[in-house]
Image (cartoon, rainbow, N blue to C red; front, side):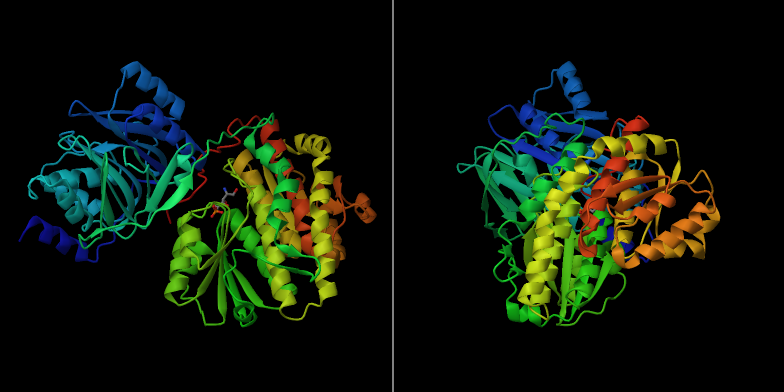
Length: 638
Ligand code: M6R
């Protein structure tokens, strides 16, 4: 039995592997060309910084030697170390790692190598059967020096290299067949000093090149190509690309040489600036009156009281046939999904549910030809959402993506896509993407309602309220000083309850998540009516309740709930519409906000929630507000 047969046999065993350490949400960058390799790679890595990471590294070939430099911490630390080492490289692969399991230290940072330091690999994704492969290789006396799954790829390829007579492509092709899981990899080998080998399975990897192929760039995120005008293509389904100056050869998983379709990417140099704000988050919060207008731009017909979307490839007949909508998303995007589901059911009268993407694919969901799946993702790279989309597609569903990042995986997987046009969101904690998502969902609801029972006048009325939102948000932003003062007062507490009813429950979910993410304080959200069913047991004078009271339909009931809390000495901060004077008798503090219709009250209340979280984080001295600990911008593992 050959070694491969043995490994294959092991793979078939129904053993449940325990994944101890792996790398995720990472960024890959690689360069072949005549310019300064190090500078280009570092610039590429910096473009990936927004995703969140905790270590970085680079490896390349110089004079037939494999040389590398790795650090824990940020890219500037890597830059300094590179300078100290006087590093020079001809071709290089580089990486930002975001650790999910295992320490974010230098040893576990990518690239990873085989024992002989003959090859180096950077990797995004998870090798699910890495423990089995590691055991197999250890039994062959191969010594491992890290806890990562990625090192298994390096050691496995090195182990097989001789067997395939030093044919790098063939070795990688055969070795990848033994891997279970998802990956995007870039690999260099000192015997092949001019080649970078790239491969991908269910994890994005883009390759960009200039016309004469004198320059080739690789990245897990084409946003890192900024500053270069390139022809770009993506690897998928175990495709392998052999890249060297002037030559790009791409093979299918059947070893067939193929020509990949490319698209032109004009990577105009783009610098991200805080524009005088202390943090990108604050800048992005203040951008919202504009980003909401951008989400509406070109999508509205006032004459007909409806919405149009250029990117929507479904015909009116197809849209009219939809009887069931499932919205899938994660985190903040799921909060938008929750609002979208309420809107679609309430206004368009379509049975709609919001599903958490990581749960959805395990539910054996009921999908018929009358079902539409809407997948919402700011980044378009969230693994849970993408897997849910694949599951829905496998069941024959039509997929509509709502996404901010052009050319992201979701935009390619969905049958049709509506863009947020909110511009890059740099802060890991999402703000402007959320309000743009709600804007698009409001407009989509309007379109679906108009295709059903909404009259032109109903539509025009809704549009006129929606068009007031940017102005209303400006009025809330003008309250920044007042909100800051109140936030400072509440920053002494360690635990918070956020409550609200109907549309305001989504405000609570989002406001509580913001507070958790950037201030590291415990915040829990409840529909206000639920408190008496258990959580009220926790109420005392040290547990403030932040109450969102901007839903007219449920206003009186929310006040009753507040009375119950006041009786138990909870400090109460209410966010209420300007005319809600009754609240003065109940709440300790009130932030009054402009009136709007119930369906759109989520906009002003969200801004208050964002500013409250931001100001508390500042007040308690959190430094890394734009890149909170443990978080990543694109969550590319399930
Ligand atoms: O890129 P996506 O919208 O798919 O991301 C989903 C979540 O990971 C994201 O919204 C996350 O919850 C943010 N950190 C929230 O601020």
